[in-house]
Each structure stands twice: as structure tokens, then as C-alpha cells.
Length: 261
Image (cartoon, rainbow, N blue to C red):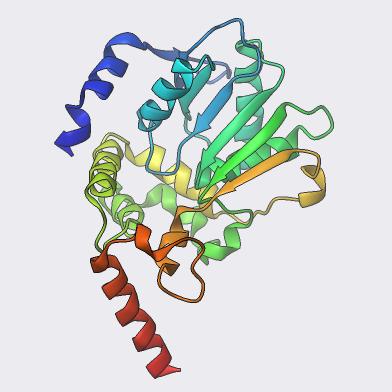
């Protein structure tokens, strides 16, 4: 965890890019937190939407790299919203406040789903130029938790964090990935009960993306979970990119599944 928190890049980011807090709803408790870097003259920036466990800081490396190439980048953290329509309306108000007519949206996991729902929400008057989806989804039924989505609000924070941590990789990973996971866990600890409960509610309440409403939006899909297939017949890229330890674990898992078949 300390590797990223004490890195020169992270310290440079924290010392040069101010965190802004913006209220666009009638409810003053709904505060959008965001980092806005790059030329303000650019009216179609890239906006990063974090996963359940993320804050506005988790995309600092992407922000530094892209602004270095002349792009305008906004990395944000959502207020507490319990309903997808409510989120979309609040996000639209935020874009209006920032005087942004169209944007590129990069979303990780829940962030990707929310990006798709916003593109769907604004399909009659498009506000999304393109979507970049990282480990995202288009139908919440894949989590098999739609029946519990209305109970997250009453669960204690430690239980909500346990639910989120259960999705983190537990197998062998390379050092950089381990540092990234530790950093995400550290960011998770900064989120309160209501923030986690509302995000899990949005993540699991019964909903799906209507594809015909976003068919005209350019979409790029990034799936880092494809690494789990290295060394198998499902491999997407060269197994040499994976460590011997990873391949050994994957081989044992594959052998076990074949023996039980």
C-alpha cells in the first residue's frame, strides 16, 4: 500500500491537482468530488467513473499521463444516490454545471454500468461521445443479488466492506498489481457506510442496459480478467506474459475442473 501512497507520481498529483467539491442537487448533502486537469478550453473531456471501492483518486496515473498528452481529464467520486435515474439526473446536472455538452466516459465495473445507463438516459439528446468500459457489465442480474439490493442500506459498514473485498483477487499477482489492490483497499477504507451501501444498491438493483438506445455510441471494452485464461485454450494473448506461478495455479484449476467434469 505504501508503494503507491509514497510514490513521486502520487505526491505530485496531490500537490498540483486540487480536489473540487460541487453541489448540483437541491439536497446539499449530495456532493460531487472531482479532479479536473488539463486545458479547460477542451469542452469534450474524458471523465473517469470509479468502481464500488474507488474514489476520485484511483485514476491519478491515467490523469497524469493523459493531461501530459494534452487531454482534459476529470476523475470524480459520486454523491450518495440510491436510484439509477436519480444518479443520471444528478450527473446531467453536473455536466451542465461544468458547461460540458458531450463527454467521453471511462467506467470501471460499476462506473462502466453507470456510464452506459447515462448514455441510455440521454439517448434522445446525446451527451456521451464514446464509452470505454473496463471490467464492466450491462445487466445487474449477473451478481444474483437483486433480491438483496434493498437491504444494503441497513447493513453495517464492516459487512459492506467484506462484500466488496470478496471480489478482490486472492491468487498470486505481480507486484504492481498487488500494490494497486492495496491502494484500492486503502481507498475503500475512506468510504462511509452510506456511500458503500448506495453504490452496492446501484450495482445490484434490478436493471439492464437497453442496447438499442446506445447503438450509436462508440464503445471500447477492456477486460483485464482475460489474464485468468492464459495457458488454456481460451487464452487471448501469449502465455509468456504471465508468470510461471500464475500458470501453475491456473493449470491446477483447469485439471481440477476437467477431473470433476
